[in-house]
Image (cartoon, rainbow, N blue to C red; front, top):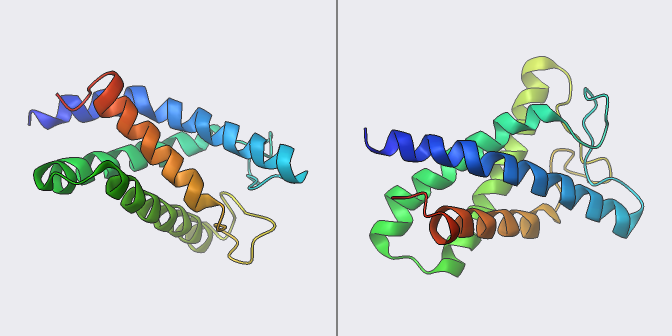
Length: 146
C-alpha cells in the first residue's frame, strides 16, 4: 500500500509534463515536415487533445511498475531502461489506437502519413525522450520513488 501515494504523486506531476512534451514533439514534427505527425479527429484543435491525458497517466503507471518490479531490483542501466520503455511505449500507443478504433469505430488519433495508421517509426525516439524525462522526473529531480 505504500506504493499507492508514490504512484499518485507521479501521475499528478509527470502526466501533464509528458502531455506537454507530446504537444512539443508534434509541433516540432510539424515545423520539420510541414505536416502534423499525428492528429486527433475528435478534437476541435486537431493537432492536440486533452483526452490524451488518460493515456499519459496509463503510461506513467506502466513506467512506475517497470521501475519497481523490473529495473530497480535488477539494477538495470539507464540506457537499458530508456530503450525498453521506448519499445513498450510504442507498443502501448499502437495498441491504444487500434483498440479505440475497433471498439468505437472512430479514431482517437491518427498518424496521417504513416502506413501503420496508429504509429510511425519516428515515435520510437520520441518515446525514448519520454522515458528519459520520466527517469529524470521520478528519480533525478523530485525523487518520486521514495
